[in-house]
Length: 193
Image (cartoon, rainbow, N blue to C red; front, side, top):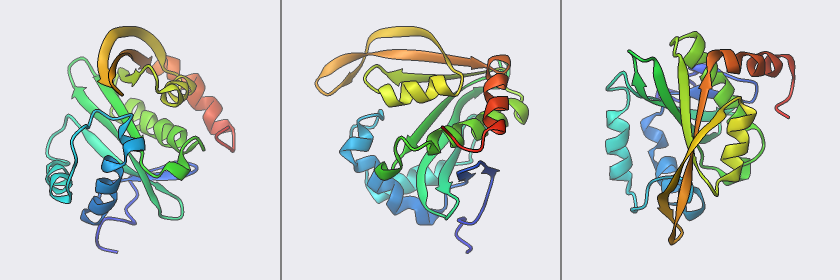
């Protein structure tokens, strides 16, 4: 099709990462407004398709952010993942991910996407360090980050207000040399377990 689906930028075992297409906007709008999905995001206000379209129109407009859709091998868009705030001098960036289709939560798709993205970050972009941050109650995200090789670097106390109270923000970091053994093991196994 001509709308940007069927484009493969990075390919994993379970997913492909591809640029977003205009036709994805209704799906993105549905995710960002879903209370269960939003619980793990910084977004708090209702988002319209127009908001998402403005966000989409800015994509690819700078070299500080690379944002890709996560699609299953059978072509279902299930989430998004990005490398953000790239500092090309320090060669440091932050990753963020969202699986918007909840029936795909906890099944290894996010891990597959993250490992492929880290390969791109370290082995193509030549980044030195990748950071991430997790709200303390997001145990699933913390588990999966540690599973991909991230190390806990610190904790910003009472840093995020969600669900009527303040939560710590757990700061994570990963160097290429720490990640390589995880990548080697990942490439040797056939499944994401």
